[in-house]
Image (tube, rainbow, N blue to C red):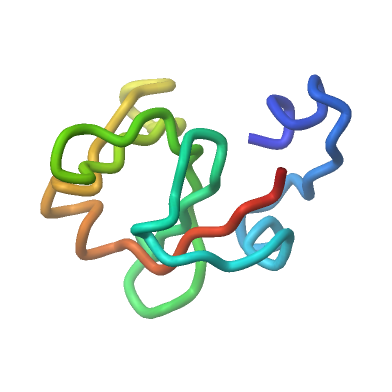
Length: 94
């Protein structure tokens, strides 16, 4: 994630937990492409994963790009049960 922002002259910390303190927190309904979405994939409420919003589909479906350990860089949806349950919050950095 930090590399994408760095290529656009915006500094972003490397770790997702540190990134979660950057920018302004927004509601999921306010998200637009380029916003960051944060997840607790290790359980609890601690940030352990981040994605960048790619598209807002019909009915407000939030699709995001992120790096999967097993699948590489992929696009997922907040409508997927796993991501919906792990979702914590969104932030606008740009």
